[in-house]
Length: 504
Image 1 (cartoon, rainbow, N blue to C red):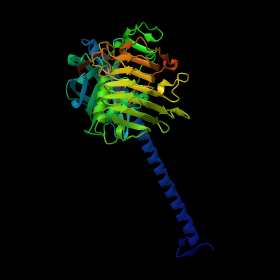
Image 2 (cartoon, rainbow, N blue to C red):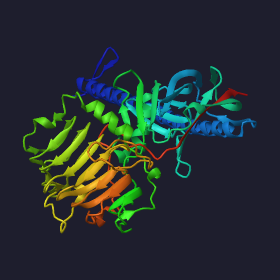
Image 3 (cartoon, rainbow, N blue to C red):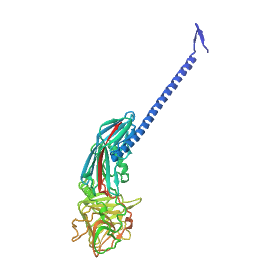
Image 4 (cartoon, rainbow, N blue to C red):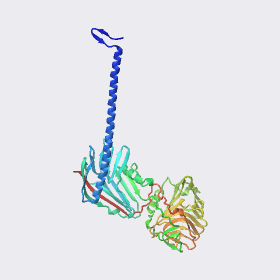
């Protein structure tokens, strides 16, 4: 059907109206879709631009940190750089955090500030005390590490803290850096045998935590004693130290600073070694004893009848005159002894340590004394035979004042003992009288493995011990989770350097 004429007016048919309406709607939809595409593209472009700006500013903050470090060293030579702070600029704050550093019961507290940038997408980039951090949503990344350094040759831990002179704002453009002054904290300079404690209270606490987690990854993060979300708000508590004993420490059957008694063979006793280079465990063991003494989650050894399994045990003192077996089929075990552990007329055996894919270990921490004596007493690793020695799975750790004795009687010890000191053992040996050494191998006493002490006395009738060659390159992990093995550390070099940062 076509159209009809009515008074000169041409009226389109219904079919024509539908076609026209469909065309208009289609055009409208295409236009709407086009606008949507343009809007999405606009958003994507804005996001890409913001990301690009964040990356530029991030690199600018890294260079800013480097320039400040250079000025703190050269001191009299001002420096400048082209600084990118985006359209919003950056804020300089002089008081945003506290850093407390201590060693050997001496503490210094330093107030520090920050230079902060925040993008339109919520990304924050901040410089603080020499480090640069980037926070995006729930993620925090270390862009540039804080200048914490350890010099192995001088055994010195250094932390030059970079501080800001005044509150101000920074815009994009030329920025100058002028040295103001430096303050050395000499009250914490000498820290022989001490761990380093670093407590940081900051709104960028998570950034600092991320830094220490990354640095301590091989140590399973044990340096962190209290994370930012625990305890005091925005506070991180860290203890820095070594996590294992150096390879080569157990290089002989008996390693001692000095030896008395009969003329022993040099392959069994390293007379030349002075244990001054090996850090003592006194602070760590004392802290462990204090923590475990009234800890409900730790099993008291007195509750064990004959067999202990994996887990942590504590005793103020114990005398084993019967049978005590540590069955390690389910995992490692730890025993903390506050006073003395005496195996006399009985046996302490480590069994089922050799599990598929992973061997398990018994670690014993003794504060005052370890003695194995009496007729046929044994402290050893199954099968407890000199023809099959597996000493690394029974590890004993003591302080510089722990007295140790094997014998008299047909007594036998298989394992490794680490209890070094500076050679001036002064502790009273409550079990052995008329003894000059920290360790005594007495008549009819026998041992397999390796013992590291400050001094040793070898009785004239004592048989020679058999050295476990597998310990020559052995480097055991000493510290249980939450504890730090003291570092080989002599000096703590802490200084704060104040720098003025401003636009030209």
